[in-house]
Length: 213
Image (cartoon, rainbow, N blue to C red; front, side, top):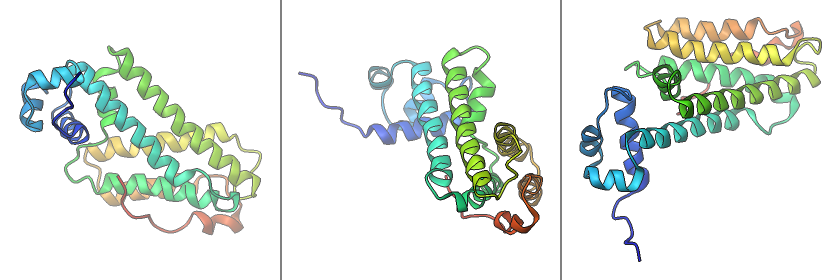
């Protein structure tokens, strides 16, 4: 009978994530993770596999969390509030980036930039995550169109792709050092170019929601 693990798996994964996030995949050794987690390398290998397998686990968990945040902001509400939900989500992403004073960026973006070209698992998980985000945005745009808050003649797929690109682009330019006010203005400008009837623009107006991971 296998002995139960004598460590908190969630805590270990969080500390491994922090290490990968800080130093990147190539810059992280299993020795670094062992120090960060307090586990011996033998225990790490036994529980999580090699460095690549551990990173895939951490990266996959992060991607799941990214989608869950979007679902929490976008999914399940009435059509009458869809435009406000879209505005809140876009501004939330800008605000999160503005508050990232250490410029660590998003582990999804960092992992994909470093590994997607050569690692099919990272490439596939990244694409799956972006597709899920695109679907959530498209669904909200369609809901706003049904309620008359966005022009029904507009292509929801294209608008969703625009907002997704803006959200992910804000993270990239924020990491590169663009100032927080400019990041917030980018979000506002993206929302302002949506084909919203003039009498409904107040639904997308106003400044951002509280910070959320």
